[in-house]
Amino acid sequence: MGQTSSSGTAAAWAALGGDPALVDRVTYEGRGALPARLPVMELARSTVAVCSLAAAELAARRTGGPVPAVRVDDGAVTAAFLSDRLVRVDGAAPVTFAPLSRFWRAADGWVRTHANYPHHRARLLAALGLPGDAGEDAVAAAVGERQALDVEETVYAAGGLAVAARGPKEWAGHPQGAAAAAHPLLAVRRIGDGPAPRAAGGSAALPCAGLRVLDLTRVLAGPVATRTLALLGADVLRIDSPGLPESQEAHSDTGMGKRSTRLDLAVAADRDTFGELLASADVVVTGYRPGALDRFGLAPEELAARRPGLVVARLSAWGRYGPWAGRRGFDSLVQVASGIAEREGDGERPGALPAQALDHGTGYLLAAGVLRALSEQHGTGGARLVDLALAQTAAWLVNGLEKTPDAAPGEYDAERWLTETDSPMGRLRHALPAVAFDGGPVDWARPAGLWGTDTPRWRG
Image (tube, rainbow, N blue to C red):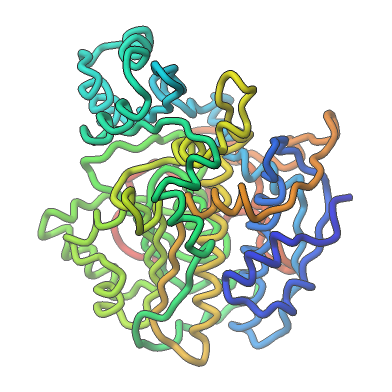
C-alpha cells in the first residue's frame, strides 16, 4: 500500500484556493516507481490528487450532491507520468528526443539543447555557424570550443533553444530563478464579469460534459491538461497553425478524447472561424510563450471581454516575469537551468528526471486550476484566469516537497495500467487515466485521431 496522506496535495490544494477540509476526501493506494533524488513521486501523486479532487468538487457543484471520494493509485500515476514513453501504435515506440536534443560538453561546463522541431534544429545549427546537414560530431566540436553561457545566449538570439547547466544555488541567484521562487506555485483569479457556466444536464461521472474547450497548446504540459478535461466530458478542440509542425507520435498520447484542427490566425477567414468558435467556448487554454498570441487579440483580458464568463488558462516555460519571460522553453531545459539536472547527475555529467515530470505535473495542475475556476463560477459567474509556469513547478519540486519512498525494484508493473484500442493510426496502446474519483470515468470516450485533420467546429 502507498502512503496515507500527502503534504504536497495539501499545499497544491491550498494554492488552488480549495476548501482545506476536502483534502480528507483523498485516499492513496498502490505502489509507483519514479526513482530520483528529488521527490518526483510526491510531485506526481499530489498533482494528480488535486486534479482528481477538483474534478470531484466540480461534479458536486454541477449536481448538487456530495463531493465524491478520490482515489489516487501510485501505479496509475506512474504510468500516466510515463505515458509519452509508453504509448505504442502497432507496436512502434515513439522517438522522444531528436539526435540534437541532448547534453553537450562546453569549454567550461554543460549545455542542453532542444531541436526536436525542424525550425529549432535549423536555428541551432545556424547559431553555431554550421551547415543545415551538420550532425552530432560537428555540434559537439562547435559547442566544445565555447563557454556554456555564450552558447546559451547565441542560440537564443537566433531563435533556438539551448540552456547552460546551473546548480541550484546558481539558479537561486539568477534573476529568473529568484523571480520564480518569489511567485506562488500557481494563480487563479477573476479577470472579468460573465454568467455562470452552462449546466451539464448529465451525471456526476462527467463533470465537464457540455463544456467547450479551445486548446491552443503544444508538446506536453498543455495537452496533458486538455486531455484531462476531455476525459471528464469536455468537447476539446485543439487548434494549431498550419505553419508549425507537430509530432503525430506525441499527439497519439496527448490527443486522447480530443479533436484537432488547423487555423492560421494571420488569415482573416481563419480568424473569423476562431471568433465563431470562441463565441460559444467555455474555456481557452494557451501554451505559447508570453505575448506570442497577443497580436491576434488573444490576451486573457481581451478574450474575457469578447466572451464574458470565459475561463482562460495559460502556461509558459519560464513565467511571465523576469529577464527570461519572453524565452521559449521545454521541460528538459527548465530542468537544466534550475539545478535539477545537476542534482540528478553523477557528479561528472548532468542527469534528468525519470519522466518529463515538470510537464506532466504542470499539466495536471493546469487542469485542476481550470476545474477549480469552473467550480468558483457556480453562483458567482465571472471570467477567471489560471496561470502556471514550468519554472514554478520546478521550484516547488526542488524546495517545497518531501521525499517519499518509491516501489522497490520488481514491485511495479506498468502493464496493469495500459490498455489497447483501435485508432485512425492503427492499434493504439496507451496509459489509462490516473485522475479518478468515485463514479468518474475510467477511460477516454474516444482515442486520439490524426493531428490537424478535424473540421473546426463544435460537436453539437
